Image 1 (cartoon, rainbow over the protein chains, first blue to last red):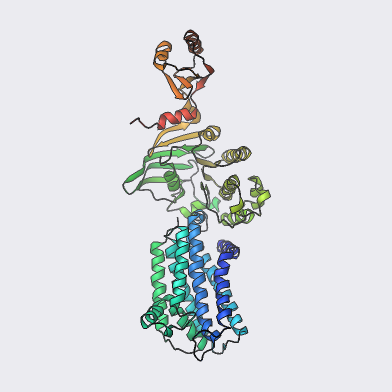
Image 2 (cartoon, each protein chain N blue to C red):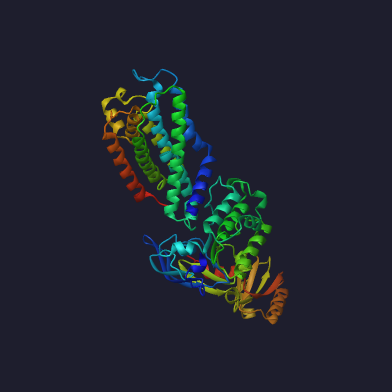
Length: 241
Length: 309
């Protein structure tokens, strides 16, 4: 427990010191929510922009932290031989992975609190929050995105990994129905969006915040599939040094 | 804790018939050697000789193709967890978060090892007190090396692997690192140093292993490697017919570098007199005459010389 605490403190300290990562995991989601939540330019129909955006932005925040931030940081740690060096201490791989997982969850908790608080300030209706589904969505989304991020980080060189993670982030943001409704996209792209982990997580989050079950269990099943496949991929492809 | 571990410290490191292959390429070919606690064992070898692969296998980073390794009586793969508490390693480069600060990093490693090493004292010991709050990326090359050494020392190790420990360090820093290495040795630690720097090896080694093409081509104490190979060394700016001089002196004369010559197999003063007489008779300028055991770099060159194609 002591070793886990030491490494967790280190992970959070390093994260807090990395301005680019903070911008990615806090700055961009909050900026998107603040801007698009306060201008009426999104085709959201009868729904207010802020109510439409919040679930998707939370999905985006989870993707930023679990995939891009974790993936880029781990990729560079691999390149810099940090993982190799830590591997020769009594810390051990399970504690290192657990420390990283907890640091991701801590950051996600902060993100959700900040984003929900910001949305509340902008007049979002948060009446029927489905807490159990929120926790399940975050857990599955974290598994799915961290698996994708670590699969890339475990194989690609630091700089290539950085570029790939950012490109994938942009693609998943665009096809995931995060800043505009999926139904406004061509039908084939809607299907791609619903099958993408970002789209599935955004749908789950929409159910969480509407208290309804518009997307039923299909989004959860898609997300579960991604979580299993991505984690298997990470275990298969990840190399520590 | 280290005291509860069943370790055998009569031999610090024992490598037996070690083979490491990368695909079809054999990097290490049936290598065997031992290293003792309380001694500094220096591993020398040109690039690609197999020394890094051997050390990485001993540290538990690389699986051997065959053969066995015992580090403090423990298998570095099967008993890695126990070994990690007792072993210090210094990577040649990197291994540190660029945004980590010196003091907090040493503190983190001391806490991870939990062997009672005082982080502040360690930072001071390696001469980094003035940069304790500086991030790794802002350190000079020598400071980075000393921080890497500090992280290895955080283990309070019974065996330590140091890869090029003085590389990129200034003269004063080198003296400091050497004194720390000797302190470790005197405290009973088994010290393994891999280096390209022959001068460094000559200064700190108790025992030397010379790797070449995946094999250990020479091993022994520094004295053993150099002894039995007396030579007379001299310099000359003149063109010297080494065959003719060899016949005159009765010993093999070789040109080792530009303007540098050795007479192998003797340090007899009578041969020196013969040499100076020959030089006078042939109007050849010679100087810097010295006699004694062969230098380590000459031993190394002889052992690792590639055959002329």
